[in-house]
Image 1 (cartoon, one colour):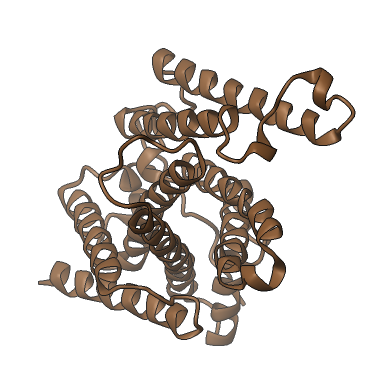
Image 2: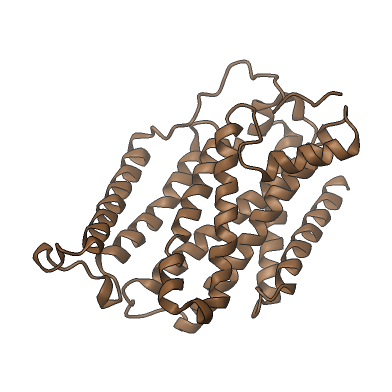
Length: 322
């Protein structure tokens, strides 16, 4: 019964976050199908995490045994569910974006217009899920800080979740600012599409390329701080594997750009232009990243921690006191 209630809360939180985004005009063209799919995926992830915690197989509990109570820590589980769902949608929108901006495939399962609409709606959904992820993490911190008054609890939860550099405990000192950077870049870069006629198509196109940075930061944040991929086991390997098609499409997009102006040409033709060197460096970096991903997956050295024989019993951070 508690699981069903918590899943209902997850659905309500996601719909609320997406509705607030649409009301600002950013969600023009948003469809009920997008909201329904996001709610369903987030709810399924939440139910899965809840079940693992209840069964005693949760990696989160292995890392933080004091959290072995799904009913108490449901907001943390919901934050995780939003985060994983958001990462899935980010993967999808990046793949669609690279497919649309790269070499034109001979055949597509749907029209280009449909792919563009999917790209826009998955982008908006990703932003809503990222914000909900941070918001629920903040709510969990507010619930956790029981030794101070409500005003200070609200400030602690907000600052730790939304102010870069404020969170000062463990791996979160690095991982949380990285996640915040992804969120604060994703919102303006995603919404610039709706003002591209004012800023100019070329300006928008140049800025929109930095969306890949948002995705890289999101994956980095997850690898550093995601308790479900904390250990060097199959979930972490799967996360690395999912990056291979992204790297391959990005490399193909750079090597065979659809726009003539973005083609590299020979050094003799473009050596006098700084842009040639920038594009050449971008291709070299993308190639190195693709090779590095293959090495990581094949070797199994993916940066995961070893599962301890005796799990730690530390809290995520020290409770605030008067």
